Length: 229
Image (tube, rainbow, N blue to C red; front, side, top):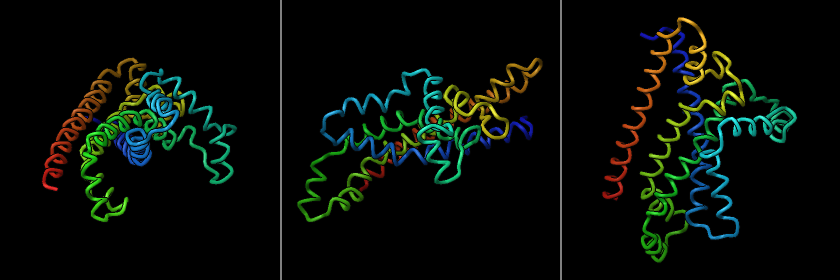
C-alpha cells in the first residue's frame, strides 16, 4: 500500500491537474469556437500555434514558459508588479505547464464537437426570435457538451501525466511541484526504491485508466442528453 507521502503526491497531482483543466477550459472553448466558426486571415497559423505543444519537445515548451514567466520575463514582470506573485518553483507554475500541454487536446475535442453541431438548428432558433446568447445556451452549448466533457477529462488526464515542461519550468520540488511523473523519476534515481516506483506507477496507471473510462461514460451520457433535448 502507498504510504502517506505517496498519497500526498497523488493529492498534489490531482490538485494541479484539476486546476489546470478548469483554468484552461474557457480558453480552450473560446479558441475552439474561433477555429470552428471563424473565417479570417491567419486562422491556419492560429491552429498551428495552438497545437504546437503536441509536436514540440516538452522541454522546449517548458523553456518558453520559463522565459515568459521568469521575474524579468514579460508575463512574470507583470505578475510581480500587479499581484506580487511568482509562479516559479510553485504548484501554480506546475498547473500552468500542465494546462499549456493539455490545451491542444481540449481544443481538438471541443472543436470537433462544435463542427458536429447542426447549424440549421441554430438558424431556426434565430428565426424564432432567440438572441445569439439564447441560441448559444439553449442549442449550441447542449449539443457540444459531449465534446466539452471529453475535452475536460482528456485535458485532466494529460495534466496528470505532464513531465517535461513541468520539470523544465518549475523544477522538481517535493511537496510543491513533484507530481506523480516527477516523483517516479526521482524514485528511479534512488537505489532500492523500486517498490516506491511500482506503487507510484500503479497509481498513475489506475488514475489514467479511470480518466479514460470516465471520459467514455461522460460522452455516452452527454450524447443521450443531447438526444433528449
